Length: 420
Image (cartoon, rainbow, N blue to C red):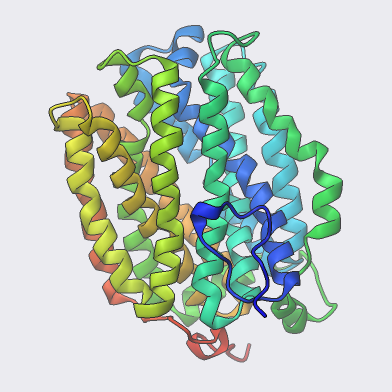
């Protein structure tokens, strides 16, 4: 008899495959941590108008400030390789604590410089933690359901945006406004004992390193990434960097655009995020399941190819009802494409540097996000520039076709461990 789905999987995300309860429990607790990380990211989009007004950020400088925050994630590439040396679990737990502290302290920022600095630190732990989270699920789930597991992790984590949107709707009534939203970031630190009990080390990492764990020579996974699969690393960089460039330009200004250009209230924007976001979240599951059935590359290329169409409609369309509809559709396509890139970045590399490969994706995404926001600042009129830059997602989707297919293949057959 097929087991029922866990209570924490919303019905609109569909039923879980018949998996070991251990795997589902691990997925649930890792997704809970990712939920709060996504909550932090949602604040920068939703509350940007209020943050800018309170901290005296000029509109012309917003792209530069946001670009600096994105670049703050560059150290994540140096943090994630430790997951290949001392374990996925240890690094993941450290990142959960780092995100929580960074988000909470952001509530006390008194200047634009302080805000940017604290968010730069938070961004480092957000990207490093997310990278390791996807490695944990990739290594633990069976090949036939690996895409579903990765997609479900992304979908559950993305629900953090929904919590952010729900609280943002009351921003004008909350004590201290946007600062109260960031104070919520303390929750993961309070839940750290739960994460320590429930997050387990992956079996593949245990078998690979045994008990000999050391931070010494932490750079070796970086060298392994370059030596063993330079072509795959370049393909991930091309796809991930271009998609990040287009999505950063499109996503980051949705809150500012709807409120400043269309005169939406915070409650209206929150309604769009919650209702349309439900459609977007399903993109993770659809891409995961379709990727398991027909292949990751084709699924990613199709959805990323549609992304610019709906982004253009959002920013350049007639307005009115097309704004929330276009938002839901480009969010769906973007999340579907992102989960495919996430999957490939962990599946295409051996256990010895799988964490580092996920960090490599974070690095190129960081550079792509910063470049996208920087180009918005240089490009003049906001709606025109964001729409043009969205075409980068189409090119990034085509780049996925250059990579090997991983559908329903065991990780050891995709990229066997080479002798040192």
